[in-house]
Image (cartoon, rainbow, N blue to C red; front, top):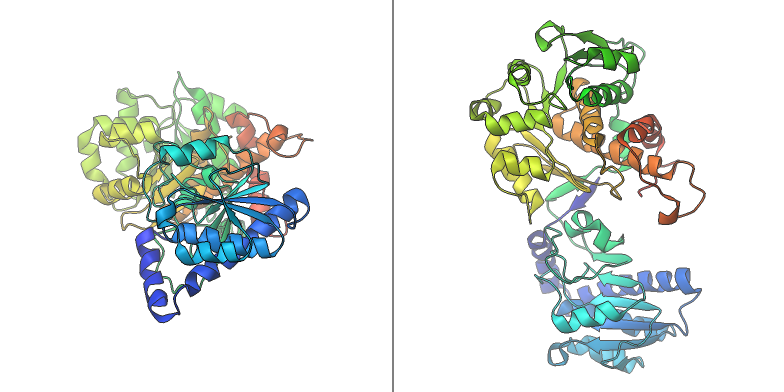
Length: 490
């Protein structure tokens, strides 16, 4: 499991080390790791370190000091190092002296480097790049290695409200911060450099692929179709039969138990998935271990009756799409959520979240998700490239999809089917949501790579929800055998 720590937690963990260690020790530990990553990046991109040009973008304070010390170490390895001091009067004195002593130079001109170290702003910084820094960054073509975080990106929320750095690599010191997963596209590859911090419980976690694989339920020797989880699906309508097909198909694919469909698109569902057991309504469906309700059901009286029936049950319930729209309209149902005898999971995208709360979940998506979960007594999965999950007790998980290939119509229906099926096997909603989101994003990335001969972004192509669903079983297989198989992130 990967752990993420807010800046307040990191600073509190640094404080005793700063008091007990000789001055500058912690910074030189960080700089050594930064120089190592930068040297590795130079070798990978240019074939060597000696004779290569490195530019340091140096802000005031310790972040600039990290860059200066790392620059001194790279200079001693033969690189030509130039420091651009954005605030010369406040440049880190010891770091600047070390760079000059090693033969590095100071210039207002960044030149044409092979690599750039972004030491403009550290974890204490807020807001976008200042105009001078933004102009320099805009003129650079070289790959950027960010020092702890890309400057201009909020360290705790990942929010960007103006000019900011987009890094090829980010070197995190001591601990991963929320920015490293909430703004993964800005961070690039993240390398963690240990500096000896004694860390508390994390603010947020992310399941790694191997953990998801271990969690995923598969048939055991004594299992039958009932013991593996029976999930009920209330999805689709005459207008939106595809939602029923996608949700039911995802539930069938995600686990090996049973799927009971209870809705108004039974014919279409059975044509695609004959293994599903269909009934005309939730009341007639038979016993289930969890319900999925909402995708494509509409917001008419029939849909409201279906939602009320499901919420009155004593099993876990996942509410998505039109189910969320009905909750936004029916405040009496909202008041009942916290009093249910079984847990409830809501899976909104940003627009649905705003309809539920009347407030957009930005700039702090984690805080917004936690607040809704606590206020309503439910678990919330807020969709996005970085999917955020919070339970009523404040515990939070996050999953970075590695790309936006799942941003396509019907993708959310597939996610609901996966997560609801996992809930029916007995996984608590937050873990089911985290594991399901991981498999969902991997399936999307596999679909985008289907038939690709080119490497990298050039070899990827847009997908549909049906393509995503078609790759779900392969995604689960990869997760279950990880780390012996490669997991494509994007």
